[in-house]
Image (cartoon, rainbow, N blue to C red):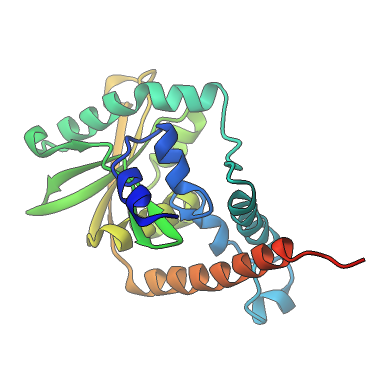
Length: 234
């Protein structure tokens, strides 16, 4: 991508067409957990191979490069619900944690870690003497909010909702922040149960494992792209 075009796209608002364009072919927070799923067979795990879930994600990113079209198939009432309530949820998180709302930054711009990895947080806020990110979920299914309420530590989040754990780890890597706030919000709950929050701390071992997985995934992605673009002689 032309550097001037890329620099302009980086300032695009979240959910905009330009924002979607910048994400094409790149590993992002919303899907990064796929790279950390384990293969079904012990042999594959011992060999350090990717799971089929991971390979599917890598292939999707390769095809985005080939077609210049997003492979994101996230749509429906649950997505609309989350988008509808996200800003309210973030403000309720800040209120419930008694944080300074004047330090709140909603929907920060997409930030690249390298040419093939990046993410865009839900928000930033001052927390415990330094800036932290916020990852808020607004489940359409209230059972998921109940499950989120069981998250009391980083390890709980990794066990209960690994998709969100690895999303947060990538965000902390990209934005160079040692702490993040995981939150779940459901306006249909009793007032004292509407918001659940849990600080998540940076884990260097998990960060290193994620970065190694990204490098391996990028190599496979480029193999797919190069193979697919190479003319076939019949």
